[in-house]
Image 1 (cartoon, rainbow, N blue to C red):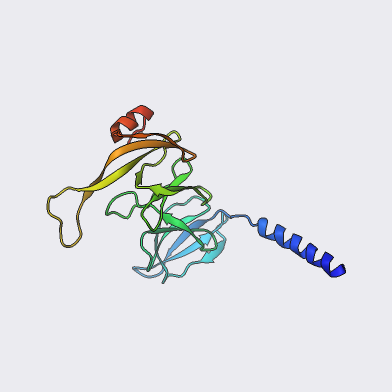
Image 2 (image 1 turned 60 degrees about the vertical axis):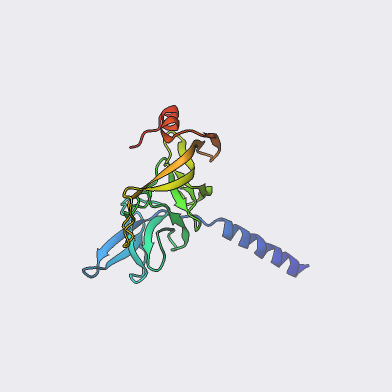
Length: 206
């Protein structure tokens, strides 16, 4: 009976220890190590170093000087952009917002677009929690708690012939559009143009 009580106490302590984990806000400090290499540090609000990042692993990050629950980095050997927490845990992949340019998405209305291995887009919040699972072919950032998405989308190349080097500029054209609320619920969807939906919800391309 005594051993059973000890096991129960340890189990309770373990439970509270696991569930008392609290994410920490941090920011990235950059120091130039060599001409082409930067040293990255994760620091707290007082500039105390929480973690020194391996220069052979990280090659770029989304430059922001404010405290956040995650930082967006380019990681060598991994395509696209990765969001990491203060322990270097990869939380999700961040959507690149501009075609053929290094432009990871930003937090807008406390939401950032994320992308999965099937190129479906969803959203995470400012704490790095996935709040709308990746499911959209294409979707805008939120404005006034609304985001426009498209289905049946195709690439429309600007030039008739594709370049062999892969430098092919294109736009995304979708035959159906709709919009969601901040919970990810589809409010309207159908055979509408992007412009029709944008006008209805007063969404502006800023």
